[in-house]
Length: 409
Image 1 (spheres, rainbow, N blue to C red):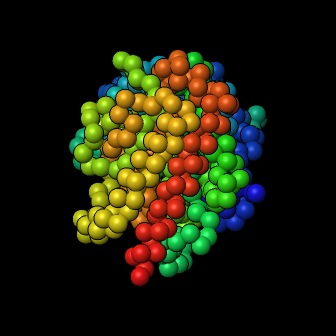
Image 2: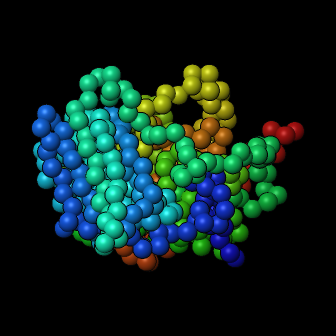
């Protein structure tokens, strides 16, 4: 049975670009030359970035706060295999990272030691060689100028989304159709997630997500992936993809790593404003920080009225999410055995905040644990884990459909 991969089909929805070109990857025509590039301190506390490119490209530059960052988006610049270490030769820049941010576009993010304001940006072309050099100058920002930081308004260059029709909300599944399960492999693209022993969370969870989708399809479910390749998908966009797919439930897949201490085994999380413990709160903080690391602005505040309405909607979905988590804990326990000491926990994960879709986040294990790494990289263990989740969803779906039938009476 074919697996629904809506990432490409929904590219226009979440990337804000219409037409088939939206789903095209980088053409790899343009490459940065870090040997000819530099980052220099300027008098008065600013910095100057000089980035050599094989040819001119469309680009946009902006700054973000909390934490302070410089963000540069490029059309068709391929950063694969290139280290950004050469761009951190200043005490005023703490770190640099680059990678794909959306099909056809890549992003360079510099973490700044203090707020700075954009002074100038230009990309002249050398008439002889045809090469280009992006030059960006930043100066110290006072409080007023720092308040102006933020992504620029949408432009035709970046792409404006077409208005989306709003279909009526899907009816709760009563067992008369296959359950549509949205599988969300965490991280991707510019955000590799946790990394240990040459293994990245993003790559590992993408592999497991595809394997789980195959297992669900064979069992008669209708699986959908939020990403089918190594690309960055913003946290809120993952929920948008699930809603556009008219999901019956949402599973987010992760494999964290601890900087200190030791932990192992799988854990299933549900949404809660109050975390089960400090470790859970820190985990949610790390996952949400992925968007910050990719240069996403998270400064917007939630609308109070919308928040109240969503809380009302969650009075129906939250108990269903709790039952889903318990079913997955039982399924994984029966098939792989090793679970975390408290296998069902809760925290304020942004990716679980869809008010109308039962949602859980599954930490399949800890990359910081050698035993868990061996399990997570074992095809046999992953197959058993997928079988446990399939069994759990089958049991949950049967109970949930029976409850839906009673409610309709």
